[in-house]
Length: 563
Ligand SMILES: CCCCCCCCCCCCC/C=C/[C@@H](O)[C@H](COP(=O)(O)O)NC(=O)CCCCCCCCCCCCCCC
Ligand SMILES: Nc1ncnc2c1ncn2[C@@H]1O[C@H](COP(=O)(O)OP(=O)(O)O)[C@@H](O)[C@H]1O
Ligand SMILES: [Ca+2]
Image (cartoon, rainbow, N blue to C red; front, side, top):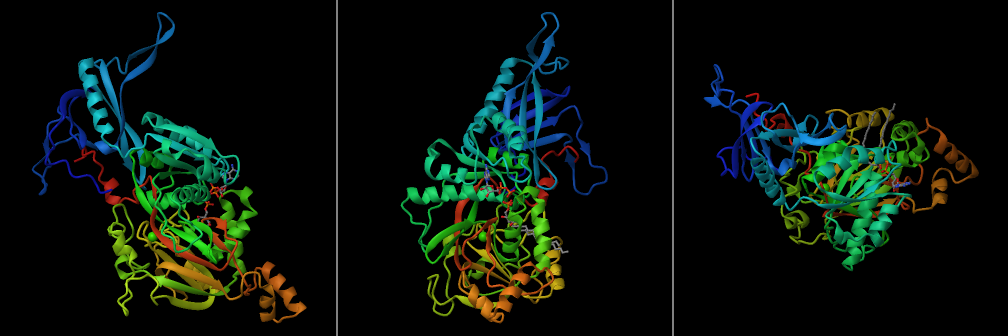
């Protein structure tokens, strides 16, 4: 969403009163766009010696109505010593005005984190106080994009096993303050959430889903919702050429996993409170989803990393170390790096049209991204330059064969705390394309340089052994068919010796060797086949997010008091 417009020219005030804030008189104004308050006891001061300003009011604050979380009449419990019981009394008895209301609103803090801030305003009488509460509530009720009923799934075993606590302590209080009602399901097994969504959940009762967990848990919920939507619409997801039906319900992610890249890349942080506030204000971020098929059988959907070779091997190894929590990826990462295996195969892909940019663009996908806002038709139609045809499959496919350390595809940046710019820094959340990254066989040292660049500002694609393409579809075929280990052994010498050495190579970290197959890491799940067909579905799902906001939005807060 764009930065709200500056407060001038003023909109017609709906309500304007002099109210007291921390014992100082403030002029408080409500318009359909902003709630503002200005300390009228502070004289407007001229910014001395400044060429910019004539007069700037000190102590003015503007809160966009769309970022107000709630308003309530303020009462405080304090002990009544006479009767030894607790009673309701006005918030601050020292305040000259006995009636008050509190407005909770979103405050931006560095690193894209949002916090819930409060202002308590005191009125001379209760009628005025109630008038204010009612006027603000009326404005909030016009924000129909805000969810009222949510279905929450918690994976209690994701990440550091903190999902349940994070939800109860940090998220539930915010939902309750925003008058959002919830049904909460703590999962009891893997795929519990997926199966519940697919078959049982009464989705008509809800305005959105919430996932408390990591990328794997998000993937479960996404699978449940997409499959349910296709089934309800009579669409067969086994057919790789089907046009899938976009899902109606938005999904909110409360990060409580090991990588949390879907949350990080769509919100800008992996902070549960920030995510909860994006849900409360009713943000909406469409997202591309890849469908993956093997010989016309549907395998899975993917939104973040689809990785063969390095990331597939990291995942396979890390699954045995789940007990270590998030650190398992680092340990398996080092081990896989040292094993330095490469794989042979063929990639065919359908490049995206030029108007959606390239994987090496300096411009990144941010809130309100212009590329993601292009009309879907402009994004999806591939124009074959030579034939002038508009069809997606008309002879535009490119084919690359080779030996690869890694083949990665990402339909979003995959930014995460390990790699703040991500695996594909310029990939767009909702442009209908994925960035395909091919890392050819190279030395360990070069591969390390490439990996290290994921963690700093250098361009990780600026190596002669790395190629990147923006694609709509791709296929991968390993050099040897799935399960064809005989061929692999023949290739390596064809004897019992070969079998012996092949086994050693598998275990021997210092050996650079070729095995027939790696596995695909699909958002943290291992795919059962190496030969796959992948297609990007533009904006198939929606999240309670808005994309990463430009820095300036939170560097220039709406509180103008310091001016
Ligand atoms: C030398 C340091 C190199 C750091 C390289 C970091 C690259 C990070 C790219 C991360 C992309 C993440 C894409 C997201 C994938 C997730 O969907 C998926 C599932 O997440 P979940 O468990 O939360 O459900 N996560 C993953 O598959 C985890 C991938 C993480 C890979 C970490 C690799 C670390 C590599 C370390 C190599 C170190 C070499 C050092 C040699 C001395
Ligand atoms: N109650 C449960 N018991 C065991 N596994 C579960 C449960 N609920 C969800 N899962 C599975 O746990 C896996 C990892 O979950 P996730 O929340 O992504 O954590 P992490 O980021 O640590 O991998 C997912 O594949 C999900 O299907
Ligand atoms: Ca994309």
